[in-house]
Image 1: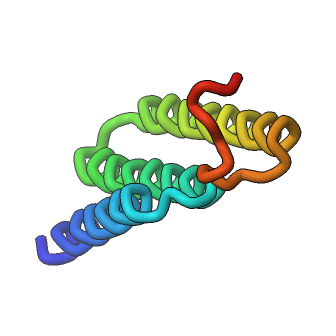
Image 2: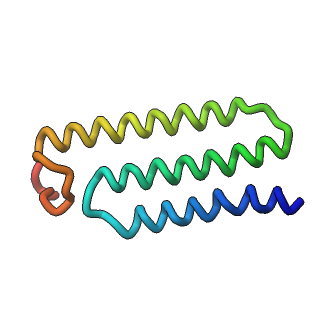
Length: 99
């Protein structure tokens, strides 16, 4: 039972580290996207350990992994679009009123 608690504790710690990185550093869009991917990976790791301990099917994990990949692809597409239109990914150079 001690191994189960360690395998459940590590993804939770990594989740909170990802959330703190997401909240603290908002200078570059790429850093924000990387912290979001880290959060998704830690949630996937936590759910995978729970599903493995319950002995259930892993179809939900494949669905979750597919959604995480789609989120990553959408974020990279937005990053490329912003870099092409504005020249960089600094948040300080963006204006809310500008399209």
